[in-house]
Amino acid sequence: MDTDAQLTERDPSPTPDQGPEQGSRSARFLSRTARLRRRPVTLLVLCLGFVLLLSAFIAQPFLIPSSSMENTLQIGDRVLVNKLAYRFGSEPARGDVVVFDGTGSFVHREQGENPVPGLLRGAGAALGLARPAETDYVKRVIGIGGDHVTCCDKRGRIEVNGEPVSEGYLHPGDAPSSVEFDIVVPEGKLWVMGDHRARSSDSRDHLGDPGGGTVPVDKVIGRADLITWPVSRWRTIDAPGSFDRIPTAAGPHG
Image (cartoon, rainbow, N blue to C red; front, side):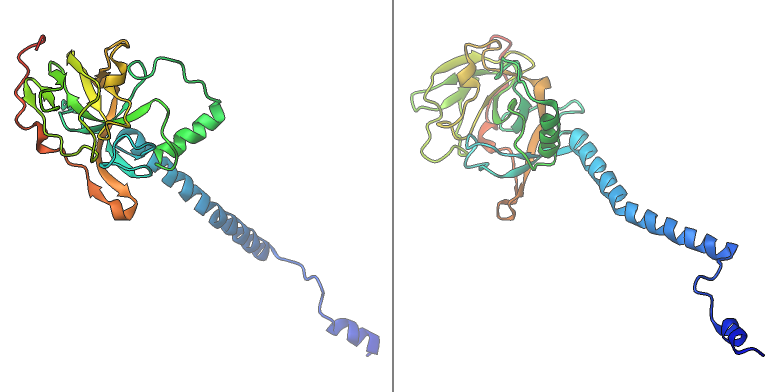
């Protein structure tokens, strides 16, 4: 036998032909690899969508942007806002800390914003990662519909329906109010104030505006129930006993 022929017969083919079964196996492997690469992205999108839905309808993290509620809430705190608190017939009660949309009560101008940054900011705010909208506020409910709220009595205390309120939640050193007021809260509205009265722009600052400084109940986004961040600040936000002795309003005219 020719030597050259023997060498030719023994040399393995550098690119062996792939049969139908081997080609199919390679295609399945590539397809599986592509699916595995897409899976983390899909899971991330699904998780983000779930969190946004949860934030939109059930509970939303809210970043505290100012000192108006100190010492109850501090700048940078993340609170969990319960959006179901007032969905099934319940309404805000005196002493509740609520987040509300101040459009039409505290804000009377159009808020212009570029759509794309606005969308990103809205998503960040919904996750508690960015400052809330400029029209969102967090305050404590002092008076509800029908209440006669005045300031101040001879000892400098706010009165609701003729009963003085002992406000143990006030920022140390703050007076209940440096502004005198006397208002009957319309039905379906709220009189709200910050716990740090010296630093809070609240119902007192809008007495001359439409609505007289009161906030419509249907503008309430939810009740702040829990401080979730930082960990050292983790605690529930309970309604104080300051309003337990307040009598029911005598009527629509106080």
